[in-house]
Image (cartoon, rainbow, N blue to C red; front, side, top):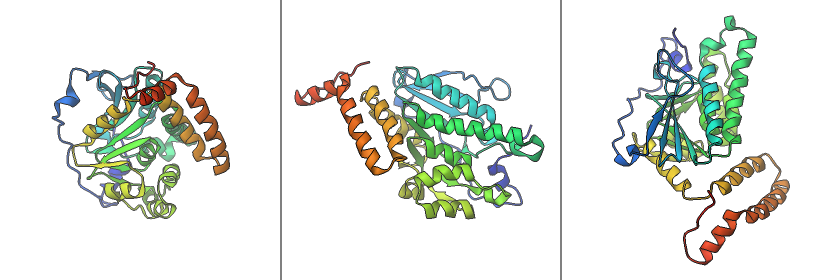
Length: 307
């Protein structure tokens, strides 16, 4: 079955392609492929025996890397893929050994957004509702789970995929990566991707992307705040593992508390955020890891966090 995405539409005779992307190079750094790295099959299957999402573990099992594995379909965010990703995020969040989750992809397209075959008139309103409700569940899960979620972007990102990237906590992207919301070209305004754009980018730029299908470079995405770090082509995996390694040095309990409050206070007025922030700081000080961290600092030693 042929899966139609925004990427394929852009590559058609009707819509001119924005960019020709090269295939991602093989990562040769031995640290990234040490004995602590191994693969597991995911619960979601593509055609044949290939998983929709490959699951890897790095850094002695502390870092989970979820790889979107539908390159022939431009890693389209189909119902099955979104549900598989959401379930794996929830399961990993319940594993106290895991410290960070990385979302990556196979091929030179990070993701081309929704599978448009699931959004045709023939599929019907009830099917459309399922797609967007599932998308909402996935985006909320990214920010509601306690673990930091890091996007590893190396290629083209369009439509709902920009919402996915914008909903992650940290984003590292290669210089060749691009970001766009071209739905306006096919009569489908990128309303839901616009939610993430409006919360990550200046409003005028967000509206420019939504109204004109403007594609921005990774450098522009960094300048305006859609991504956290810009790396050389082929270095995204190395960068996100380095970020994860840094996070692994710190207390999971404190990171959990901090992430939860960060997203809570964003939607509050500043007076409410300040008052609640003071309460959270006091609660933070009651935690064993806070007591240990302060004692270790004063005693000039490394802290020993509660596992």
